Length: 285
Image (tube, rainbow, N blue to C red):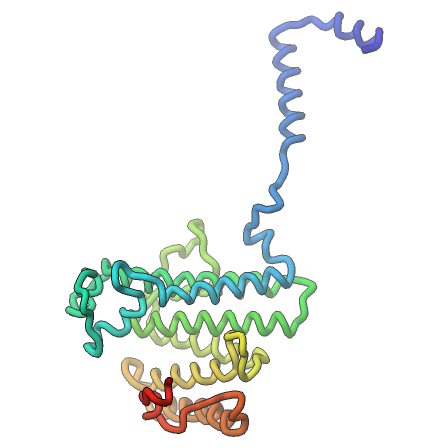
């Protein structure tokens, strides 16, 4: 410390006010110095910035579809929600009360399988909504890659809504990312017609996304999109929408597109010769 600095310090009148002012200045300076953003703390605003982020976000949507095979308590899995109430299967354990309720047709909104399916499907929808909302703004990014990712995300959202609308009828229709601060955080159920319109729009967008006819990795393919669209049209033709012959014809047309491509490319798509072959154990082995 030089002589001039010592002189300045010695002339300071150390009052409580001056000490407070100096303390505040020091603390403020330290606070600014220590204010840093954690580069590893990813948020929706900081994450969707490069093409790899788009691929990772889409992978998260795929991963969330696995809830179907997850456990639903002792000796049970979520997929049994679709089978137990039909009367075509049974259980030998009788140790899972939720599963017993499914078999006894006395299940309700408190049944574990119902809760798991509701949460599972809407998680897929939420993840897909994030991809569809954030990925379009990523630059630079190959447009073909971007279109493909968005097409796959729309297929997966349609896949989830198709299950949900068949299970519960009028359901909340959410097509944008939601947070606790969202204005419509608790949306009311939408008519089934509106839900099916979103499903069809999503599948048509996926169909136009330039997807390969088959994908050995298991990702969404053109064959999967057209087959799903045929199934959706077939469902819309009957109860409860009962849209009739036009939709039966549309379902037949989409099915024919897959069948014709399979016939022309037997090494790429292996279809069973007849519907009955689906239940032939020898062919399935």
